[in-house]
Structure formats: structure tokens, C-alpha cells
Length: 275
Length: 313
Figure (cartoon, rainbow over the protein chains, first blue to last red):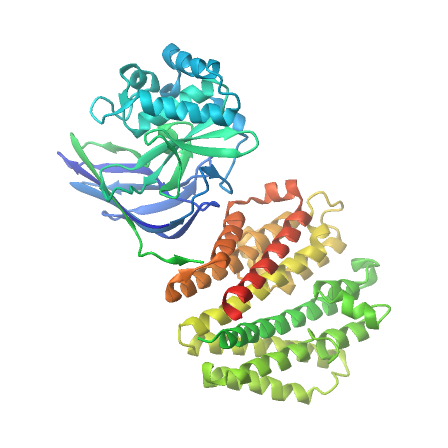
């Protein structure tokens, strides 16, 4: 599937800040299931955009804008060819052994409730790692309600699980926390999701999780949709949790209140015949 | 475009590129053997030239041992060897004539002029100086032809098929140099900095015109693992495997976009490129440089076959 992406992140500041520094993880890399045809990042202010690679192998761009700026727009567009690999992620950059992804972070520390939830699944007789993870995916999708209101970017897995509500980020964090509590390495993935229901305009990117299965490698699970990743998932960055894979992180000097709007538009390119 | 036309254009470019590559090997070997024995050791460089040219089988069917005279003749002038410089230019010119109307006047003049001038060399130069001049002339002919294609061809499928030929052949050639010399590039190799190694490494770099580029990129004395890095993973180095694949993928994408359909070769080429992009030299050394190159050559051949199946037949 060829997906065209247009993604705007718009900051409006009450008082124009003197300077803004940001780090972007907005550039996807190729792996066996996806190929980036073209990709570019435009920043609305004059600035220097430096490309780097973080320790997990994600492509990052850093920029700093000397203000004052009233509005800052980060525009990303590109086209990517994806293939359905049944969720298995092969050929991606692996800088660390899977065991590293057992490490807990503040956002993904499992609460006793999550531990019990995961242990109950294990006790329910899901034998191998893969079927256990599929069980976790299904139960989590069943148990949780998608709701953008009660949670925010800093909500931890434990908090979201306690109220059984959250967005894709919370679903992914809970999945990761539960998988790690069962001894399965898991990581957070940020990216885009092309919706087959015709809703092209979205107000956020997407997030899901990958878990390591011994004979298979990394397998992607999308608990917010209750499915394994398909060719509708475009993988951009991976990390231990949201903070490690967040599309935009930054800080500013001055600026008062800020208003953040995100517009993501995904379209399927004119069908190209495959033979 | 007819498959047949695409096929001729693709092979035309491949043959010209191959002729240039053979000239580079011969030049590098000539330079190595001109050094005192104390510098280059006892190894027979002409043997490794035959191996790098990928025609050891055909060569040893005729000759029992490799020396300057028979290797030069076999790789440059022999009509019995289908991959000699002479045969390459003959085949290129035959392919060009078959698709004369798909070429520009400049391209035709370049390849036809080369073919005519080739006759002047008869059965080969009589002296080393003359051979050097001949090898330079071969490289210049290839440059002239390539420049004509770049500057005068319409950017359509005809151009993209010539580019595919160039880069596929080039990837194969660079990989073959690495395959024959890989043992020189292993980091575990002892006597780092010995004269023997230095001249061998310089010869590898020279055979792909990368000696100056090396110093620009690394600003260091010659280190084998950096040479491997330059020739395998550096996209900015025009004869590296990564750069060849960047170009192969781009041109395959253009063909796919123009025809409105893509197939197995696009997928294969992208996966090879992805592997090159996602690899680091440390990991390649750890898993085995030799195995890596072998599997690359196999992939490259598979892509050649798939291009033939998908477009050229």
C-alpha cells in the first residue's frame, strides 16, 4: 500500500517566546515491510535542522529557532510503500539486544493491577509467548475503552489502567508494562495508521507496541485497534516508552501559554498494480 | 517500449561499464606488479586480476598459469573471452546498433567511434607504455559514453534502463573486488601498516577511483575497515554498493511510476538497499565480511535475473 502522509504540528504562543529548541523523531526508516519513497520536513521559521541518529537507531532532527515567533509550524510530508508482514518487523535497525527492552521506565512501571492482569492471562493457559501476547492484545482491547479525555501525554500505564480508559499511547504503555512483567521484551513504537474507514484526517499520530518472540523476532501489536500491525501501519520511531519515541519534544524560553494543534492527513496513493 | 529495446539499452550500458572496470583492474594490477617484490610479496597479482574479473574458469581452460602477458591479452584483447574489453565494446556496439533510434546522435557517435578506434590497437599494444595509454583510452571512452547519455538522453524509460545497466554492473564489480581482496580488509589482519598492506589497500581504492575520496571522508591513513566501510556503506561514494543501490532503487521506482505498476524486482532491490542502510561495519565484520559479500553478490545476480524476467523478455 502506498500511503501519502501530510502531518502538521502547529504551535501558537500567547507571548512569542524568545527561542524554541526541539528534537523531532519524525522520519521513518526502511525495513522489510516498509520503504520510504520520499520524505521531507519543513519548519516555518528560519532555522538550522540537523539530522542525527539516536542510540536506538531512530532518525532525529534537532532545530532551534531564535524568536520571537508567534506561530511555529512543523510540516512533514512524504510517501511510503508498505507491505503486510503479519506484524513481524524484520530488517529494522537493532542497536541493542532484546533483553534491554525489559527495562522499566516511569511511564511503563506495572502496577499490581497490571501484574495481576498479566499473570491471570498466563495462568489461563496461553502457552507460547506468541499466543500469550495475542491473548494480552485481545483482552486489553476488550477491557479498555478508547477515550481521549481523561489522559494526557504524561499519564502512566498504571494510571490509565486504573480507569480503564486512554488513547493509543496508554494502550501501548499498558501492553508494554504487562509484557515486560511476564518477562517478554517490549518497546513503544510511534508512527501513523491509515484508517480503512475513510477517515483520512486525524488529530494525532498513532502508537503501538512491539514485543520480542524468540523464534520470530520483533512482532508489532496495536492494542488500540486490537490487531497485529498491518500494511496500514507506518513505523517511524521506537523506544522504551513514549518519551523515547515521541514525534516532537522540546523546550522554549518564554512564551506563556501555548496552543498545540496537530493535523495528520493520510491518503492512499492511486492504486499501483502489483505483479 | 519493446522489451527487446529495453534489453539492448540495458546491456549496452552494462558492457561499457564492464569494459571500464576491466581497464581499472588491469591498471591497478600493472601498478602493483611494477613495485619491488619486497613491497608486494610473493603473491601473484595477475591471478587475482583474473579472479576479480570473474573469468577464472574460462582463463584456466586455456592457460595453465597467469602472467602479465596472457592475462593482459585475455582481459583486454582476446576474442575468445566474451568478457574481454574488446568483446565488451563489440557487444556494446552491436546492442547500440540494434536500437540506434533509441539513442541520441552523441551516444551513437561515442560508442561507434570507440569501436572504430579499437581496430587501431590491433592485437594489442607492444609495450607497457602503450598498454597504459590504451587502458586510459578505454576509461575515457566509457566516460564519454556515460557523459553523452547523461547530457543528451530524454529522461524516460530508455534512460532509466541504461542507468539500471550501469549501476547493476558497477555493484557487481565493486562486490567482486571486495570478494577477492576481502582478506586484506579484515580488522584482525596482522602487520597493520606494513608496506605490503599499504600498497594492496591503495590498489583496491585506486581500482574504484577512491583514493582521494578516502582521505576526504576519513582524514586518516589507510585503515582496512574504513576502506570496507567506504566501498560498502557510504552512499556518497559513487562506486560503493550503497550508492549503486540508491541509484538502482531510484531508477526502478521511476520505471514503476511511469508504467503504473511495480513487481518483484522493486521489492527485492528495496530490501537490499534497506539492508545496506541499516547495517554497520562492526556488525558486518562480526557476521563475516566474506559471507556478507557473497550474499550481496547472490542478491545482485537475483535482481539482474528478475529485471530480465520482469522487463526484458
